[in-house]
Figure 1 (cartoon, rainbow, N blue to C red):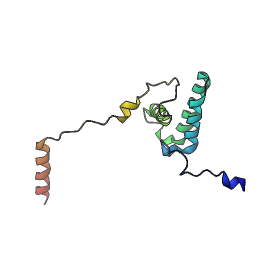
Figure 2: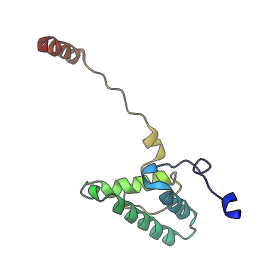
Figure 3: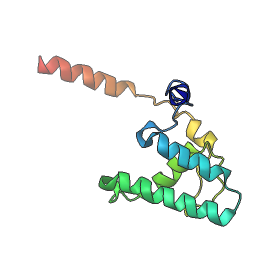
Length: 120
């Protein structure tokens, strides 16, 4: 009966930051944040990156693959992980920054209208 009382439901757990990696990765990243020794923390972070790369083998040929994995690791740790990254760390403010609006010239809008008129 004690086993039933200690069940952990997903609705009671904290929200996953990047759901595609799952709760086990989130727990590994949370554990890495709590490690006191910097050398051990770096070793654990590199291990997490290695396993994250194994989950997505189809992206290994992408030029910025490792950089994306390190960015995702920092995002999952809410930028609290203090490790030596081989890439520059993207700031939280830069990720939350909205892109600038595009201004479409009126000439392009007129061309779209003419194309639809001619195709009818």
